[in-house]
Image (cartoon, rainbow, N blue to C red; front, top):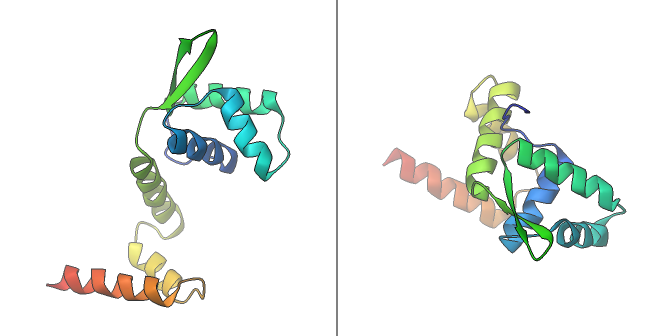
Amino acid sequence: MRTHHPTLTPNELAIMKVVWQHATATVRDVYETLREQRPIAYTTVMTMMNILEEKRYLEKSLVDRAYVYRPTRPQHQVVGQMVTDFVDRVFDGAAGGLLVHLSKDNRLSKAERKHIRRIIEEMDE
């Protein structure tokens, strides 16, 4: 059995996003959704969903001769663990380094910067 690791590969995360979006999904459901975005083989999706089950991100049950997968944990929990893992690996656990990097990134909208300022101000109170 594979050991649990908080960081998902990009393909695993793409699959999990589809399953979270639908709450439950078959391999076919995930395959059809991902295929709209990029070329991918059905067998690749099936293999990756089995790996996600082994990693305990998904669980499956047999419904009308097809396996239906559901997430074992909510998206916010998995994403939070991935962010924590990223901060630990890249910024040696210092979240401030990530915030400084993001604050200098031009991809943040004015509204997002304002929201971050508000959160920081609330933390100081």
